[in-house]
Each structure stands twice: as structure tokens, then as C-alpha cells.
Length: 433
Image (cartoon, rainbow, N blue to C red; front, side, top):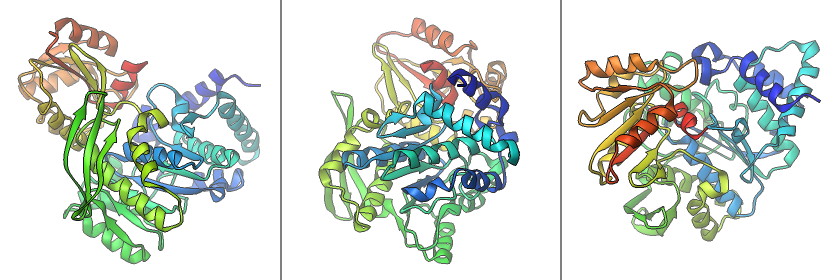
């Protein structure tokens, strides 16, 4: 039997992988996905699903939904990307990662079946097929499926879900998805299916009409969650959780709803997830108020989600977050402004296909910067990031290894300070590894 290490080497080094190499790995057709699905006897026909797309928040929203369905007693699959530490994080059932043997068995079966077919799938295409095949074998009741990139041409977009969820739209991956909000929204709207309800977490005049038009074309009921749900306040609790007072229209629906996912921006994800759950209840899923509350309170515990305003140290306070584009980092920086500290230290790294100049305009000038570089080909060289930052009036030290950059920030900080680690999912991944 092939070893797990050899299989990972095959997946990472022999297949085109967007997270590492960028647009060269992107396929503008579902041809390989459909062929792989047929090769494995259409596994996605064997389980119910919820499909989640969006620029930011789709990972948190997917984990929220999975946690609630687990608390409701359903065997729940969860497919997300990218992973932080372990490849197997991408494919979970009731929070448990796919086994190493499960990964090996699938890849061996694929290579055997592919001897005559000669498909040349990308990393993502093969990983989606692996997830769907695993969920079928595990006989899950429902699987929460996160879109990898875009929606219309994403490998996950062969499912017929119970509900489609689109969190929000902002500029990201413009080289592939389009240079305008309307173009990007059209790509995300590609997950809207005929007569299947669609929920949008965050409404916006810039793109609502795109979803409304697509929903009308598909005869799909559409709901804008933030027009129904809102929170009067949120606050942090001593036990490391956040509490929201959630109203639905004018009535209090979830007083004191706790979440172990921190960050005020999570309220927007909560609205979308609550609306999806409400629709699922009307479709016959037995989801009690108690299951919803327990699900939101135990997202990280139930699903293993990490890197969302995650506190990784105290005295000084150390926080990491995987936000990596203008809109996501805007929310994170707003959270930083609302966090008490004496001095701010940022360990910052980015990838080379983002609008760096736009993001740099967001950053505070009066902070201590440690420019770093994740260990992936797509990483923007730390020296280049520092040079671009300098042109924006931001100066700091260049320290390439993420762990070394964090160590230097800790050395420089006082107990009352705040250290933030982020700018890229892969910087956070390097920190955790």
C-alpha cells in the first residue's frame, strides 16, 4: 500500500494547486469534475447538502452550519479549503478529519481507474471528488460544501443543495472572477439553482440586483438575511466567547446567543447561517432552538475551525486571523481599533495576487511592523512588501520566517501591547505549523 506521505507528495507536487501556484491551477470548465464524478459513480447523489459561496465569511459560515447540524444529531460532512496545518482538515465528518487511510485509498483508486481515462485533474478537482466519495461512504445525512473559488465554475458546483448561501461580495481574485463587483457577483450567483432557496448574508445595492435577477431566472426564492436578522450588541465574555442579542425583524429571537468564534464581523455570518437553518426547518430538518444555540457556542470545538480572530497568547495579547483581502482586513482592522492596547505590532505577510497597494492604505502608520513571508510559491517576497509599504509611509523590519518574525514581535512587545499575525491565510498556517 502507498504511504500517506507519498500520496501527499503526489497531491501537492504533481497536481496544479491554486493555493500554492495561483491562476495556473484554475480550470474554467467543469469537465474534469464531471468526469471524476462519473468515475466514482456520482457520489454527490447520495447525500443532502448546503452550498456556501462568498468573498469573505464562507468558511466561518460553513463551520457554523456544520456545528448546528451536529448538535441536532445529524451525521454531518464538512468540506472547506484551504487547510491550515493538515490536508485532512478539508474533509470532516462530525468534526473528525478523514483518515490517512481514507486519503490513500481514494488516490490509489483514482490512479488505477485513471490508467485508461487519462484525466489530468487539478489538486482542487481531485480533492472535491475525494470529499464527495468519502461523504457517500460515511453515509452522512448532510454535507456543508464550501466553494473554493468563485461559484459558477467551481468544482463543488455540481451539487443540488437544500439551500444555497452567498455570504457577501467584494474584490478578490479579480484576474479570474472579474474586475467589477457585478462580474464577481455573477460568478458567485452561479451556485443559485432552479427552485432551490438562496440566502445572501449581507445585502448591498452594488450587487443585490445580480442575485435577484439570477434567482428570478432560476425561480429560486431569495432572502437577504441582514434585512431580517440584526444584533443590538455584542460583547466578549471572560470565558473567551462572544455573545450577541439577535433579533428577527422586531422580535428577539436569540437572546444572549454565544459564539466561540470571536470578532464582531461574525455577526454577519450568523445572520446568514440563521436564515439557512430557518429554511431547513421548513424543509423538514429537525433543528431545535437548543441545537442552534449549542451549535453556535461550540463551532471551534465541534468542527476544529481555527484562525478567526483567534487569541493565541496573552500579556501581550496575541491574535491571528486569516483575513487576506481588502474587505476582510478592513473588518479585522476595525476589530483591532476596538481592542484595548498600548502599542500595536503587526506580523504581516501577503500573497502576490492581491491588491497590495489598496490594502496598505488601510494599515495604521503608528504601529511596529514585521514583514514576513509564508513558505509557498505565491508568497509576496517580504522585501517587496516592505518596499511597497514604505511607499505608503509604513516602515518595519523584514524577517522572512513567520515564527522568527513572531518571536521578534514578542521580544519587542510590552505586556499591555497587541500583536496581530496575518495578512494571508498562509502566514497563519505557517505560525500554527
